Amino acid sequence: MRISANCSVLGLISGALAAGICAFAACSVPARAVAEELVLRGTLYEAGDFRVGERIPNCGRARTILTADLGDYGASIGAFIILNPQKLDRLSAATRLFVYSHECAHQLYGPGEERADCYAAKRGKAEGWLQPSDIDAVCRIFPHKSRSAEHPDRAARCAAIQACYASATRPTSAPSPVATRDGQTYR
Image (cartoon, rainbow, N blue to C red; front, side, top):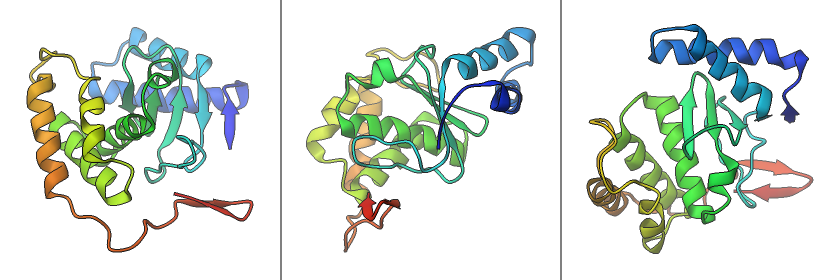
């Protein structure tokens, strides 16, 4: 179910987002304000309702918020995957799915960019939406220089993604369906 932020869900989501932000940083009024702004200006998708093309990526019970107010392609805060549609709309479907899967890895495993990149590369290969030719497009979203110790530079991240992709196995059958709606199966 897609929900435009309104008063009936605002309090619950704002509190959860603020709690998630506070878990990663010293909780302050600005952090709570950022969480509330993301909810107010964003669109909430329940788990299983967000689509990338014909695919419905999932990440357990994590819900997705789309907002142009996010300065990056994506983020994982609390129980939410937050994506910037203005940035993502310029990317290929494979790159958008990579960003979603990368943020999903943060939901599952916590911080660690290389681990999140590796998870996304292996998931993409296993589910059939990431091909070797897509990795260059994925790599173009990373800055050339490192932003921090946790965010390696583009060359290091791309080498790690290629190694993870190479070590992943292909499924022996078609990927299992993510969702079925109106008699159609989406992967």
